[in-house]
Length: 336
Image 1 (cartoon, rainbow, N blue to C red):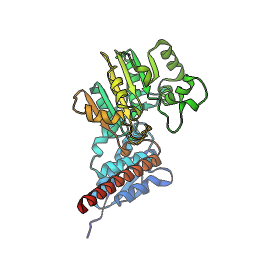
Image 2: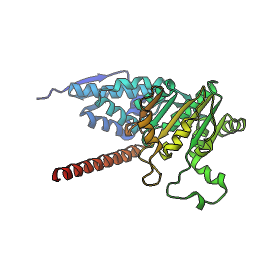
Image 3: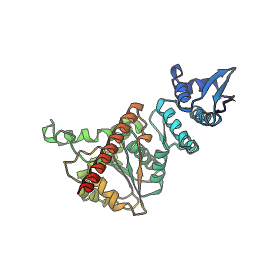
Image 4: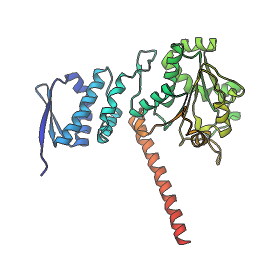
């Protein structure tokens, strides 16, 4: 028979507890179901009832969320799900250092910092390596964190300029059919980069830097023939580069520069059969010590929890598809 015990958690501020448990106690129910622990609020304390190992796990998550609240942050469903998953992997301790690692602040004063262990490893790699590839699904903060690191370096005088680029590859539409001149056709592909810049620095500051030439946002095709010294260079949507474009981009690097390449292998807009420059780079450059490949997963998605579920559903679908193909190849070999 399994032993059931209880433990009282005291000194948890009521405001923190309300934030941790969420509206209509929705997060409390999630924690209870995840660890099979009953939670009772009594006389300003929280009593946990269940098996000792489950009490220990739920306590670790609650205290982690409490520190998150004390640091001035909000608790959301993604944060609760993430800490539950970490505790099931016995990795809650790895999360504790994230709250202190602030990269910079947005124009509204909101701190920008890694929100998952995967993001922390990505940021640490950017600090240490000359070239970093951030590879993972949408919503994992690949570009946003890279931009925050670049802006911090520019403000500190570590580099003289930031250069951001993307390949102008269409997702189902042709540039020639869009209205306007060449610049107005290119701008939509660069808009996400501008949006991130405006969030962190503000539109007026960005405009001043662009006038001085200390911030550039350009299509990848415009990078050919340049040598870039003392610059922070970000290539976004790298899965849409060809192998030749990737080689061209990486050989632009000059002295005192740092390069971040971001991409999502599952969202290619290249023509059927065209090899992605991101895929070829992983095979060709993986053994160069100055280059780091950081892989983010659905666990690192920091958008709406539904985005995380969508990403995981697609990951499961792709894994099942690969498994079915492998089974068919095995069956074919067995018959022949």
